[in-house]
Image (cartoon, rainbow, N blue to C red):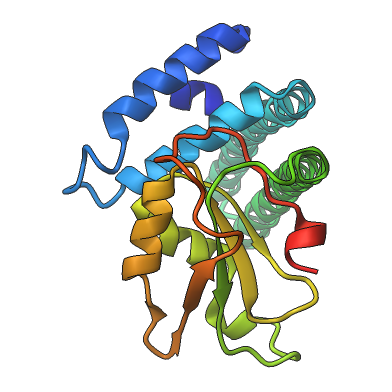
Length: 259
């Protein structure tokens, strides 16, 4: 996913342009305005991620770096395709020459060589693309973890609404009772913007979800039950915040909230 294309901006766009593009896109695709669009919540979440990355200097620099690497990988793949075409044409020419001389053995040898060469080129292209894909995923993961750790250290105690989640989960269950971070985010983002979601490292079957608005948290407390086979127990983490929501900065502290 190209974050610049998602927001419809140029790569050199300033923070002001990034935020303006985000507001325009977010207003048009907000889940509350598109109740009949099953993809509205996911698109809204993607826009939030794009804003988060492109307005963070370090994260944006890392993203630009891996984006460039991905582009270069695509260019290398295109060159490999050209090499495949050239090899194919050369070998087909040899095949025709062999047929002209009535050499059945030479024809078989040319066919085998073509197949082997194309297979080698295909493996080379796949390997390079896989290396670039892993590089991109790892750098984005590292930047995301650094951002959340920094925010957790400096924003504890803010007034954003947070809910405590519990479910049945054995210690040795690596799947966390089927409630992964992605599953929980999908369950709760339909009520409103989810600023953060943290799974407890010490307590299997426990997590905290933070909303941008109090109303969204209230709806989640009142209506969400989780999966039928393993229901969720939902409660306020720090009591219901005063006001009607609208805070726009995360405030989860993984160390203090889920210790």
